[in-house]
Length: 317
Length: 279
Image (cartoon, rainbow over all chains, first blue to last red; front, side, top):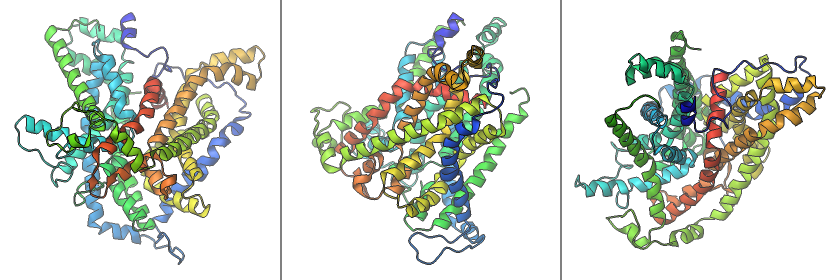
């Protein structure tokens, strides 16, 4: 136990997260006063969140435009028909998927590595934990600006390093047709990896330590211990985190808006950037809303497949 | 760890950790380095990590070029108001969700999850139209309303975890001792919940302080705009012309979040995970 608490730096201040907690016991069985407590949150949620979402979906079936005098008409599935033939939209959709996979997968692998390292009794652990805060707390706008400075063709550290190593003159990463998307993906990985790592670390600290020791005594190697002891505990957390990361990444906006604003030639134009331009530069509210609907639909399908893994792994909670 | 780890494995672990440290730190160090470089060094084709002649010129220029103080004040007021509203409104509901299993709390939990999956564009277009009809476009209160409601899902998410961490037995004991419902809440539950509420409020603050998309859509005039929006003005249409002031402004905009985050980081992880695992 002392060993375990040595690795759980934060243990005693955190709410005891984890499946070992008991079910909540109802204190107030009569339920008096419940509505009074719920209304302050429920009303704004309904008016400013649930309502607008439904309104937004409805707008997808209209020809709503900004600043038009004529009243908005229902157009049925017309926007969706147009979308079907809008190659620019599907280009951006494909870019969004490449970006979301390209960020989420390395993000998870790197984060798992970092979490496992931070779970060890290493000396630089506190430093890594402290540094991991930086990308997490930074405004995405600043992350974008910072990496523009790193990628800057003349005054940036990346090209200077390439020149120092004698690997050539470097290049203009963010404006090159071939390099722009990989370059923004690297930034995406950097920005979200620590957050994932810290969450996985919290999950790791739920791993029963005794089991680990028992497995070690039985002669299980590091990989086997990871597979048989650590991973089963971590798996639900990992599934939830990768699912959320995928959604967030697919729907992300600010980072790429600042880095490339969708350029060069639309090579990094994520669906959200496309929909934003369509809605607020060209005023096509209905059409942009239809894009939003398609994004939700496709994401839901992908997630359903991903989370089906949770059901198949029978022994999970 | 009690497992015997061989020396080479240990060395490998340290090497990997060092790799992570470099990867995490270098862009930030470069930002700081750029912020303190005089214009002459920024123009050089061989930039250095440590400025030869460090200067504060870039910070001065940044304030000259863009209304940074005004923008910071706008961000501060929007973020503080939104965080306060979100927490005040979410705490009672989170309490009910954590303590009572009802259809309502299931629905609320479902909504918290679903609301994460919706692209913001689907929310902002109708909100834009609604706020326009209420004449709240380009106003502080319009933005605050949007931020408060946007902060509600994760505020609920975190707070439910914190409420569950308060043992229900304590409340039962108090009511057995004859304390009324309200008294139990105020004198038993609230003190135990306060650190979690503070952490949630600070997290809501940072999220609003860092937010770009809503602010970009809802705020039109420069004197109303928040810090992230104003930062994008440093990047011209053709990319950043003036790297020094850009770096200086970006560095300053990060400091508040970094300080707050350093204080609450561990609580956030715990809170989010508690919500994620248990609901």
